[in-house]
Image (cartoon, rainbow, N blue to C red):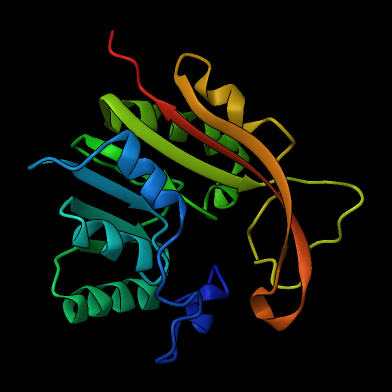
Length: 205
């Protein structure tokens, strides 16, 4: 197997590279789209599964995919040890296909793996697979001339331009939109990121 991402190697061990604590943004999504029976979630780029498993624990029907086989294996392992089910499998953000809709779709730290020629089609798919009144959460790393490239920057990651992400959701209702610079310690070396984040709702026609 050719390795397109270093995370295939970083996810090999028993330890969880990102830990097992879910992202804080998930509780914000739950407030915007509270669980009721039958509600579903799609995690695009699930890594080792901490966020997907948390949403399954909250009752949602969860589908998740990642480019890394090791990440998907650990997602399934974490789900099993947590007593929940997650439909997890290997797929690529650049050409994934989906034949159902979801109430919540999120992707964190993954959109920068989109090839330039696939961006427009990716966001078209997002609109197609999000249910009316559904919620989408996306973040992406953006380029700032005064910030150095992170030490654990991956093989195919591409920085976005400031504000570029938001242009793909012009017809959606913005629940939150922001750009922040924050310190990170991933890879064991302190560094800074700039990240754009959007939470938006697909307004019923």
